[in-house]
Image (cartoon, rainbow, N blue to C red; front, side, top):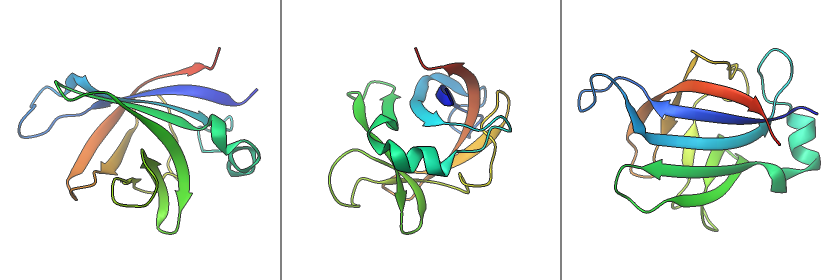
Length: 121
């Protein structure tokens, strides 16, 4: 089974010079052995590609990891207004210690560190 649970934690920013373990995304995606998203497997079971967002004191949010017109996105409600784009997810491996950039719905780029990757249970 290729489905993984990936924990992304906020990396170093101006507001959080040490990063933050209170600002995280938990995503479930199918990964190939090299850490890249398995697009065909995602296409067969898009309902399994989920995201949970925990952002400090904000209420938790749940949604889906979707293939969007502009790439990959984290989507919490119908439509694109709340979508958060994941920069080059199709070509960037998700392995512990790697970094990805998520652009939130307000256009702010968030550096995220892959904190862990585990088999989905």
